[in-house]
Length: 253
Image (spheres, rainbow, N blue to C red):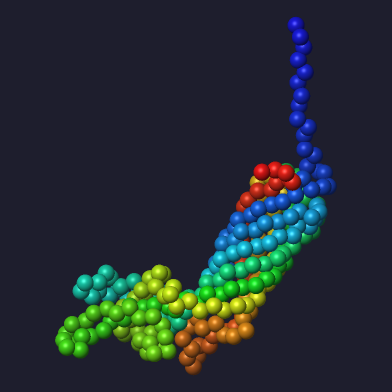
């Protein structure tokens, strides 16, 4: 009888001080005190403690003073009124590109352990201002008893329509106003704490908390300015983000 030799795979030493992977790709979601963002991140593990990365994301910024309301009205021939934000002038979407670094503060722990580090990044923000759109109640000039609904996009001429809540029927929907986008170029930065779960595993899982900012050369008109309401050219935010993805070695698909 011919004997058989059984080869056992060499176990990974999770106490090894080295880099098991060369690259990581992460997808993430972030909520912050003025909105949210979705991200795609590509990183290179430069050393055991240091990773550099590029981050691409799309997000949304709102003014913390915004309040959504619904008057629950009904006009013949129309659906019941939809929610709207009183005094809102523009919706503000952001496209961000940034370069960042991640540094671990101590040795990565064993498998399924927790690695703690700091991250910092900065880059360019392309803001997209989309005019807010409302449905407004109008009266027929030829028949004062007849009312109808008109869709109105914010402009200086429509300012009074947006501030006269008595005649606002509701919001006109997300897909209105995209033909009148105005760009705004700015800068952004972020610094935070990073917690990586299972730092030696192929599948990457992490979360972050910290502060971030966006700054622009001019005021961003989110709300209609009045005596007690002014817009700003900068936004500081606290954030919490979750990331997931995978790591790979050079040459792996």
